[in-house]
Image 1 (cartoon, rainbow, N blue to C red):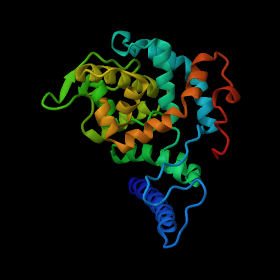
Image 2 (cartoon, rainbow, N blue to C red; image 1 turned 180 degrees about the horizontal axis):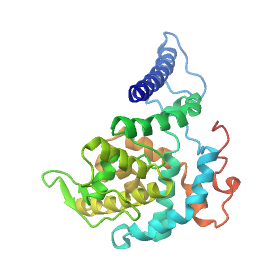
Image 3 (tube, rainbow, N blue to C red; image 1 turned 90 degrees about the vertical axis):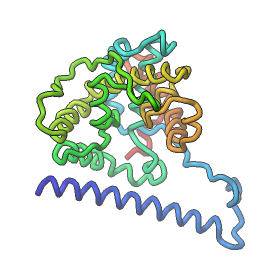
Image 4 (cartoon, one colour; image 1 turned 180 degrees about the vertical axis):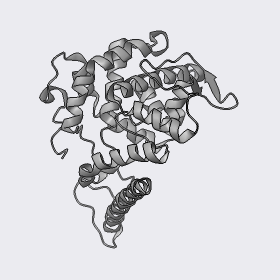
Length: 288
């Protein structure tokens, strides 16, 4: 019964968010295409591409506090998983990308389009965790927005690559993981155990860094130069090539969001005594 309640709650929350988002979109589109409608100053004509919503580097206060505590773990994970010969990044630069992704996953496009949804984000996060833990689902969970299936690939040292090869094996390790892949009777139990790890903040940082290391091997396989955008696109959609990134609206928007957090991520990594006012660049303004 409790499992059904959790899954129904998650479904209801997702449905309400989708309906709310669509209603806002339709209202904007109707106003823009109304006969005789004259665009306001700064508004594009109907026939032009409509820009996405502006992205402010907003960070919930509890997330800002958590990331300050996680700074040592981020630096350690960067040292373990950066491969300078592949990334051409210093460990500091690799750590900044880890922090950048964690900040960017704080909110998403629904909260950008409908700021009122930010109040529901903690509830939404908890429901997804419960769905994985109790219902055996495969939903992304915070703080790194990883799926159990992706974490399982990491634990199996697998890196998906384009056909015909499909999968390569690389020596990626997750420091601190206690998941024994042979100890679970079914996938639901395995996913629940993995969810417990990828929702633990310090282990989530380790899994994220390990996933970024996989991105380095994928980029090497495809002959792609590595930038922070490469690693962010890999984390978001499992792609690295500039052509695939260009052809994915979801990734392009994700990278646009991420760019808004670059200064915040750099401030976190570069400051030993990082305070909210120094590390969030007005991050908590309007977040609640």
